[in-house]
Length: 297
Ligand SMILES: [Ca+2]
Ligand SMILES: [Ca+2]
Image 1 (spheres, rainbow, N blue to C red):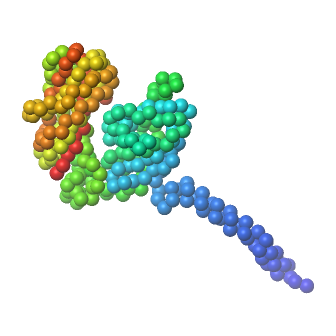
Image 2 (cartoon, rainbow, N blue to C red; image 1 turned 180 degrees about the horizontal axis):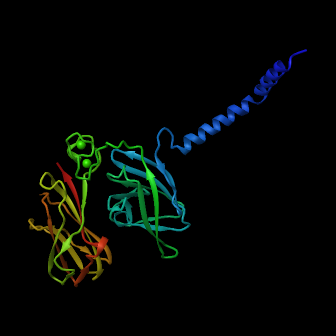
Image 3 (tube, helix red, strand yellow; image 1 turned 180 degrees about the vertical axis):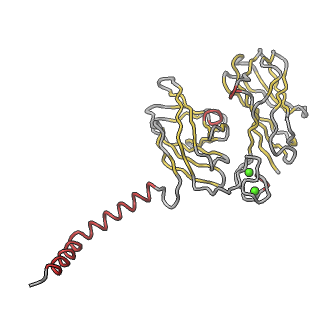
């Protein structure tokens, strides 16, 4: 007669043989869940917004890559430049949707559609804020979410004007950087907020930390118009005689690109001219003029 101990051992063995496959299956499922929840082999975190499902987050050089799905139940519109901010820093986002890249233009995202947000130099940001307009209701909504990437703390960020990884080379002078070198210079100080028909004003932008070391290859002047839609506006660096092709001004943010190569100086100045009617540009808070400068070492 087998002892109680042997009986127990045999029972345990039978249990394993009978239910072992189930334990293996459960272990596999748990493993898969941990893998999925943890984002696979890394620790990237991507928190789902109330009205947008985060499908994934990743890193491409110093660029943050985030895939979202519009689950608001209706079509929404987002302007990447003014409506997507990382740690309260706006202007560095682009949206890729339906094969088109949006930076200054507003993207219309269909209900249920998936789109990608790219944040230049934003891999270390810990919060993202998105403002969008619902097409069906016309309401403007803002959602905020925490996030995080597995980017190392000592990565060289391309657009902060600092030697982030401590090797003595700043931004795009550091071969560790693979992304674009774009700076947004804020607090533009226009000499007037009303630009009379047929005249121009000069806008001065604040000093980037890396002044003098770089050439500006393109500049986009962003300005917010409160009155004067339908007029034409054009821009140029003050030292350059050539104006950009005029754009038709709309209410809200307007963007004019100039492609003259100038040396980055502290307090860069750009002329903004209008024709057709007076326009009024905002110099209030976040709606002050901005310059987006693409730099080369
Ligand atoms: Ca840097
Ligand atoms: Ca560096």
